[in-house]
Length: 109
Length: 113
View 1: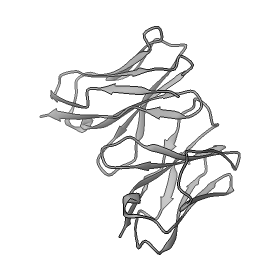
View 2: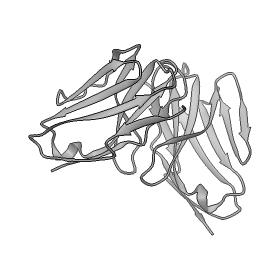
View 3: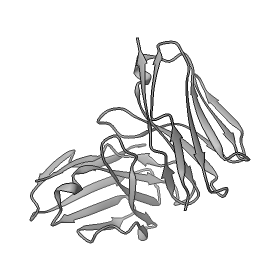
């Protein structure tokens, strides 16, 4: 089955700096890659996603890049704000979601 | 309506109790999911329903029994649970069971004493 690795497990950045979280996957048949943000005690919320026929997607301060050849995808958050502090999960999907282990992001004011 | 709702928000039960978790969506989605999530871990898939039929059961113990009464509702019946079953139980839905966006409910925080 699919195996998704996510790094780093924790990340601290100063407010205004950029944050990058990376995921790798094992199954080349995976064709959908969502990113979820989960604040403490709340539900995972989709923040951005990308499909395998696209290399990059951007939504305001958030962007995702996908390298199918290397089987990795990354989340980029620019101009970070304290409200970006949360746990971020990547996932790879063919039929069901395979989640990464999560990255706890702290943005220091 | 673009939300998945779950009840109750919190549940405390003893190991001999029987209880049920409920999930509802009105987005016309045909796929619904149950996940279990422990603190600081990713959601773990338990069950998948597609067009009201169980399509995936991730080797979940029989003390968890899912039910899909109709296309908008999903239940999880709980019986004889163990303390290690304490977790956040998340429901999700998507248009189809495929590489498609899943929308999560707020979850039920379950504590088994």
